Length: 137
Length: 137
DNA sequence: AAGTAAGTGCAAATCTTTCGCAATTAGTGT
DNA sequence: ACACTAATTGCGAAAGATTTGCACTTACTT
Image (cartoon, rainbow over all chains, first blue to last red; front, side, top):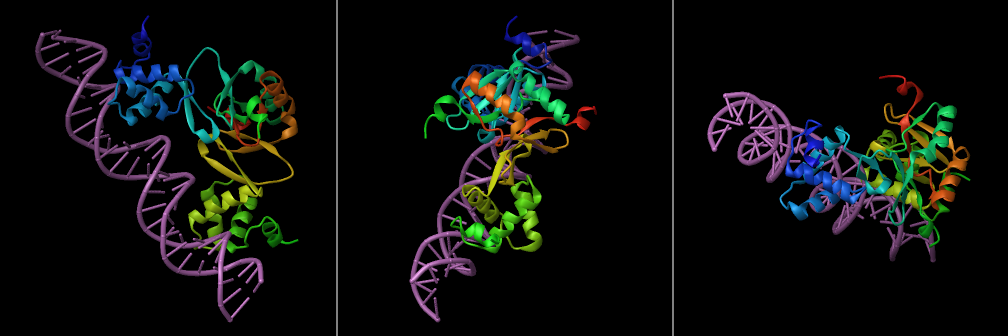
């Protein structure tokens, strides 16, 4: 039931580093590899950045985490959930708003109808400004 | 009327490098800085990559060009036009489909209504797969 | 024609991500 | 518990993209 099993069930070895990386991604929500490393270091100071990168990749391969591109900020990882969602990324304050993919269905359908394009909104954020930033300068 | 004026009107000096960078962005459509440099070199072999980067930034500051993030492929520049458009970026073949912003209006409106989010679809591409890539493996 | 500030070239610095390789360690069988 | 093997880690170096400092050049002004 524990954490162990979800990793081992995927055919992965259970290392402290790997568990911590996964835990950090889950705790941080949309963190950069750097931020994940930072977080892991609080528990496991010796972890190497390469190890973080490799684990993020490995965890993504087995479907436990996913990354998306948030424009300027670079790549960010988040835990996989049942709920696939799109990301609205405020370019001013960096806030990320999650939007259930259903809310985007009619849009993606129209892109399919109009352009034959099969949209994957989960993978790339949508840029813009959140309410409060929009109301500022 | 000529090219000179559009640059000078923006308060910029008219250098061969700058003109060529602008011309390259216009000719290439959605080119990476590297590609712009490559193109400029055919006319002006000595141009330095830094100069290309600096000019892209400068031209963007005065509004003559814009960049957008196309996921994995990195940053791409295109000329500013009357026609703002969104980019659909096929993750398999890299093709970019331009979509008039009108076609996205009801979607962005719904994000505004639902989340108070002011979407800027021009800035970040939308990932997915084009028709033909979708029909392959 | 001379002055000056913008622009350029060059080399080095940064930043992010990847890679090779030797040392370590988790999971397996004994 | 013990040894074995392959996966994983740490480390240092490498690669790719973009930025920066600085001295030299050049476009524009007067």
